[in-house]
Image (cartoon, rainbow, N blue to C red; front, side, top):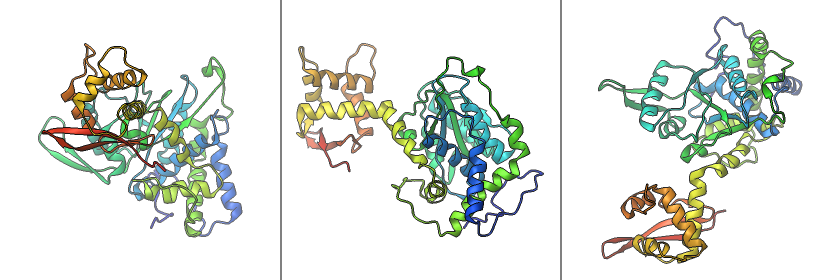
Length: 374
């Protein structure tokens, strides 16, 4: 159980007011207004995005008291819209200083080694700043959902196991999350309908206001979490968020409980924009249109779509295969394709599931089956 008087770990020299043992409705309302006040100048696309920011603040404050937490993304169509400032707000409240930032890694190997170093250093909040291409990270996926992360230290044979209780943020223009990270991310979207967002002004100087009112802001967040806990953590009418159940039952549910939208509503747009998901939806659909639920050899599929004057579904499936296993000559390599399909075996997208359907003369058979995706 969280000790709401002691769960804040980055107090520095601040003197924090005592959190009410049993917050009144008025204290809850005042706490909510206190937090929303610092967000009033931001052009949120919708109120869900505002809830994502509140969720990030709550998470950063109590991150060391919960087992896992999602990644929080901040995006806008254009630079200078306020997304980096929003990310800094989270850190200014939780740690008293702006974010520690890292750049997007060039590949998964570099990302693994760097993330281990980041966790060893122990920064409570880490922000991927100014991401410029679709973002995915197998290592970060593991870190977000596991209590500990283990890898070999760069430059020697030593293996280190480190805790993963860091809050991760990401900023970028028109952020796209690809692969498994899309199921572990919440997204705050800003939209400013002007050509030069850098020329607008904020009524509040948040880099000055937050340090001066940090005690009050932390107290507001903890008052809401405390009130939700005292109320018995009333169950909200929401779908589970697998791998983040503890976070969902406390942070997410408390936000909904005080009348704000569900921050997880931002996940659907992330997943819909995932290029891997889009590719598999096209692949599964066109395969099923061509072969129904028949079990076929991969060679049979390739031969069918490689003919001339093929129909639309053949062309769609061929394009999906080429995108899945890119080849400079545009030729589909059966062995490479089989390995890639094995990675997505039994995955369901848009009501279709890719299955291995036994062997025929020592060769794997494949099929795409329509399933109830409720």
